[in-house]
Length: 511
Image (cartoon, rainbow, N blue to C red; front, side, top):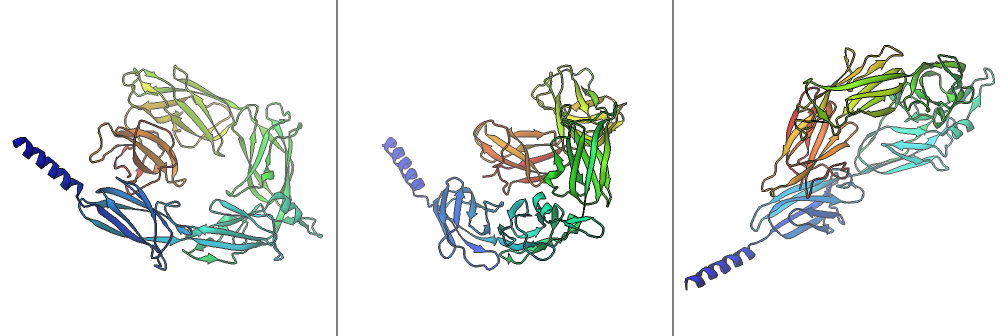
């Protein structure tokens, strides 16, 4: 009889659990400016269960028979700033019992820009490229362009004029003999200097029409010269030659010459007078360029001799604060020219390294510890605390490498925490849970830098000073690499890294 009573109670409790009322998440989707309902939008639910529905004509949606837990809702609707374009989502915590959670989501409508590119006389200019926020559109035969689905905001509208179009539209002054034409890049409403551009503001849900750019001709000249070896004054052939303006702007592709001629000569045409930098890369020696400032006057520059000094060899070594420390593995040293070119060199087993054929100029050094570890604790990560270049700390700072007399590079490593370190915390996490933590720099905007497995502790020791965002997700296994498809969530944390300071954070994983 006692055994029967126990079985009856167990069955009764199981029936009650099976009949426990489920929860509901419902809501509506609206236009953020007009408050009009948005039909035919896809709404996806992710959590203890995952489902998706389409909003009704009145913009409503509903998910029922849901177990309790934390949910995340995303939205997709053409013509709006939705979850596919930005971090637009709604977190909902559904408690146990017959609970109904209601949400109202407002999506911002996208805008549009259209207009025409006109020449100096007001005639349409075909076959030029109009760029907006990293996207480009060619103009048609009537000079018109169009950008749809533009996120509301302020933009610089630029026109790139190909060399062929520029050459076709040259005019010569009969009196002076000077040539006038279009710059390789011009900016709304018609400036050839990006600092003089007027931004175009796109309001939500608005189509801006007649955003026309009228180009202006300007004086254009030529620049020619010869690349010479400074030591013997012999011509340098097969050197890559590039001309860059003082202001960051899209250059004319013709300003990049694959190679100088056998006599070292080169020529650039259709150039505005002003300040430039000539970058000369001796490709047989190094991927790093030698930079020469150039001033081009109103009459141009003809047959300028460009003397290239001998390239130098930099020598260096790594060391730890404890001179008795012993290590295993290698580190990687990166040297970056101020123009953007860079090369890497790995350290030898004894900790020394050499960087050969470095053109004199301004550089920055960065260091990656890679698999370098102290033998006393190979699990502990190390990081570079300084790069001594004589009396200067050259770690991520600009230093000048001379034609001779350069000191030895001394890379100092430490096993003390650096950059960002932290822990992922999650209530009711399964035993042995692993997480992927990503760190993204905010400048350039949300550029993914690194990802690593947290168990649950993590550390990013080699981050330059700046602002970052960290995001954690639960992972089924230990993995590492780059995860550009991981988007931020409400649990994403923003952290500022300062030189010599460890930033400690606690992360909660995204759902």
